[in-house]
Image (cartoon, one colour):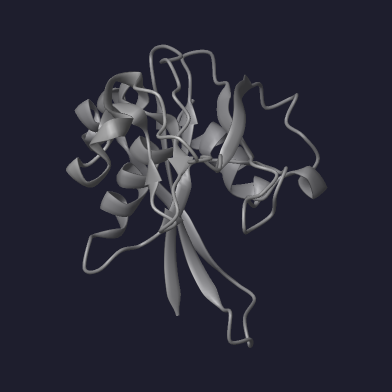
Amino acid sequence: MAKYASLVVLSHDSKVLLLLRGRTAPWKPLMWDIPGGAQEGDEEILETALRELREEAGPAVYNLVASRRGSVQCIGSANYDENTPDCFNVTYFCIKLDCEPEVKLGIVVDEGKTLCRNTATSKTEWLANDKPFPDGFEPVLEHEEYKWCTIRDLPPQDQVAVDLSFVLKAAETVV
């Protein structure tokens, strides 16, 4: 069974960081989501959540959360698409921050690797420091926009890729 991790990031005033999935995203395009993704290799599931946060929301959010790693709480897990070949498990984490850090959305390159310009690897060094993309390269946005949303103003479940019950549980857990 594939394993995934998602991280509910709450601001000081209990707003949730939501990311709008890109129109060309391979899974649930144009739906709101929280940072998260697939576990890679033998990484711990919390490491998955933190890596995905850095890739999808950028270094400012990641650095703030990583510096408070001990405050990240696991709030549960759930299996989805059970009894199918596509069955997967998501472990949900949450943290409450004392601010709304700057978000820098990542991009998806040809290999399906998500990169933020501030965290580009040497393989794609041209991404670093906001250099222009090479001629002919069209980046695909995994997420098109973000917002900090109050619990009261969360979109309805049919517009959200994540199970909202875990977002609500996070808000209750870290108040």
